[in-house]
Image 1 (cartoon, rainbow, N blue to C red):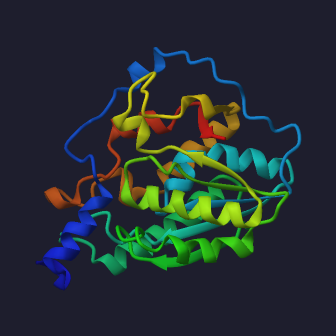
Image 2 (cartoon, rainbow, N blue to C red):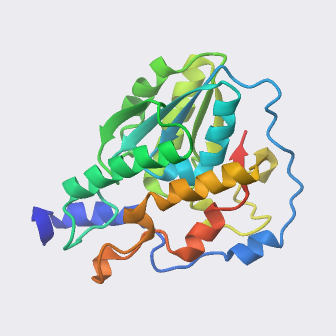
Image 3 (cartoon, helix red, strand yellow):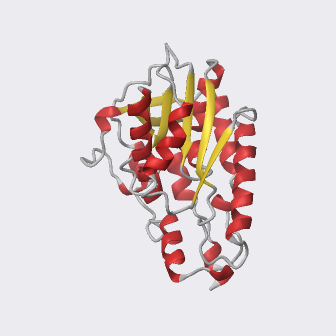
Length: 260
């Protein structure tokens, strides 16, 4: 087994790609649905916003455009990287987990630069990829000092059906309640497993964020920075792209969605 991983570590790491054998709900199906959501109200923006990413790329895929818009409104941003994404390719013969993590950290900084957010600080928690569950209190303790009552906390949706995303969402709920901060959740894998009008999803809480053309293009460039995730590491099956074209289509729309 590559790089000395145990069977347990391989099983846990494989949770990074919970839908690897299923292409999910096509983007064409989502495009045919008009839920009539209101736009997220940005007339009185927060003074600051903390964006929590379970893995490097979640922040850009989920709300990269909103981050850029908030920055243009003079909102102070902080990114919290819960893990460094070392388990996205379990069993890879090309990159060790440590090297993969180094690349993903570098990709994250490049992606933020493409969004015009090169100066945004990134707070790294250092939890293990695939093992955030069970550490919600620890993560909440890391988040709480970064929060203010007049700010926002943006984290992955607690019902996203990825264990790290859900644990991150639960930790954000704890921290936001303690600090009196407004919590907004952004879905990632929900677009994969859910369907329009799916009763399992809190659509009533959904708000849309329209992305101007220049912001949308910047988000596309930022996503392109995550080469370890959107392109194969090699021709070996274990090096397949985590985010194939059908997944990216759902995440690169000219609008983003948050649950408020």
